[in-house]
Length: 272
Ligand SMILES: O=C(O)CNC(=O)[C@H](CS)NC(=O)CCC(=O)C(=O)O
Image (tube, rainbow, N blue to C red; front, side):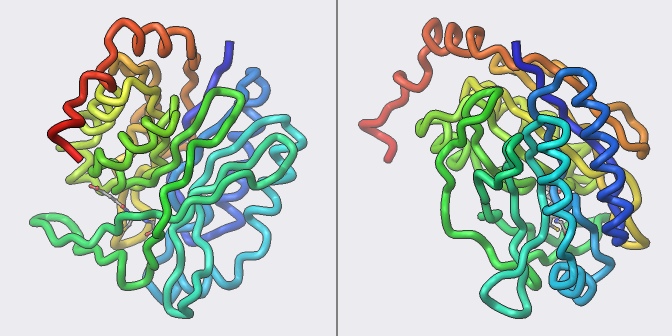
């Protein structure tokens, strides 16, 4: 039996403080025999503005190295969202890393879909103003809990991506996130459960929660969903760092995919 932990916390622009939160969560879940722990998008920091995000991305030379040590010390795999420098000096990458229990970065994904929106009663966000989008789908990664399909946050709205990962063998879809309050209230649960049901995969969605700074707040509600669409575990409604655990049972997944082979029923003759 393999257990996974999904986490939720309120990140700020204080990298060392966010690191301490992540380290304590790693220790706590490892004590419970968890094989892999999932952290939110932008776990290294949430910047106050584009300038600060660029500056912190360039300065930060310890966050990921320290997590790699924690992975070894606690014998646990880690999925985490961080910022990385990109080929263009004014833009960063919104990155999702998977770190093995040997401390190796076994996979790296750059967010494909950028969140450029202007909706009523919600802050205007223009992610493309400081972020370079990725241009590659990353093949699912072997891990102790199954084959992981890597995505980030807003990617959740593009089912082509999760379906492609499923066709390439994904068993667990991951969405490290920092959803806005307004879109989270309306869409978060529905989209996550839909992605689990239509791909017949586990979905693990870690989440930032609470007020990060004067301008930014996140919805939270980090959760683990099974391939039937049942929410197995959900972090509580608090801005304190929390985690929730669930068993990832690939036998259940395999049986469901045999009994209800939706992938084979797709009208490939009609759709591309
Ligand atoms: O800015 C950072 O450092 C971290 N990145 C984020 O928080 C990103 C881009 S602003 N947020 C989302 O994608 C929210 C998506 C969302 O809320 C939705 O799809 O409804």
